[in-house]
Image (cartoon, rainbow, N blue to C red; front, side, top):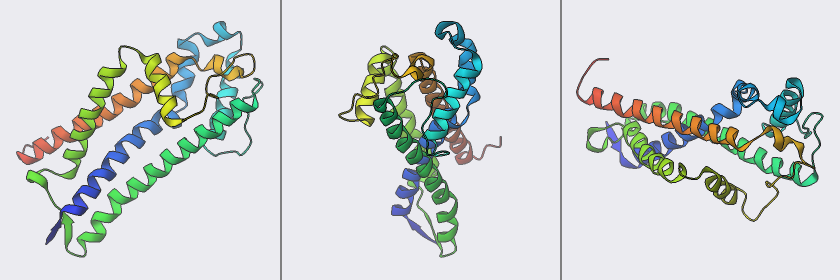
Length: 220
């Protein structure tokens, strides 16, 4: 059976994309994660809004960002044209993330099976599976990211927006005109980041340990 190094590198890239986009998708798609913050952050008392108003504003905003509706809305909360423009940018990023998640998933599942029928399989560098290298690369990268972001999340939050929304300032909301920002405190985004990084690290450690066990023929 022919072994392809090019295919192996491609699959490593696909696995890296899958792990990142899958982890990012969890806080995006699992809305109870936000609902939990309404109570834990005491948003009703801090904002003067009732639970249902906050929940509806978040749900309608997310429905737009996920492409479930073409009409932008934040429930009964006010929003500006600039604010809506930012959420259009967010929508584009969310759709891109979900598209890459689907694309990488299909690649991981279909390509190896298709090529195996043609007697082609991914090459194993030093005897390890591609998932081992994808996990190791990501683990190193995100440990470095964590070390740099822990001291000052606010600065990291700003850098994130400067990278993904270059040349724009419409993400700097004024609560007088974009009331949605009062129900989206920075600590919520910090917890989203913690969740995403935690999932990535967990998946990476699982894959590394599993590969090590497989290489030593140790049964779970």
